[in-house]
Image 1 (spheres, rainbow, N blue to C red):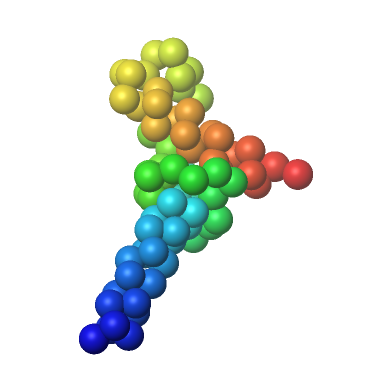
Image 2: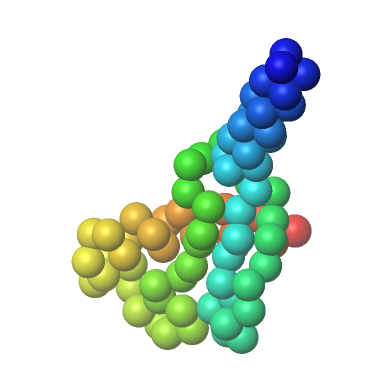
Length: 82
């Protein structure tokens, strides 16, 4: 019984660590999904760019899309740039 409880707690901790440190993003050009390691823990798992390949300014987007674009830029664009 004790081994089973330790196993369940270990799985829960592994799931929590995975949720906080592993992310998935949708490529804005080819619409492909990629898995990546986040540079800081954040609850959000799925990232996408609301702007996509358009030349739309962030200030002209609705607030929720602005926030999504900021997260995409922080976690995806900055990490891919050398």
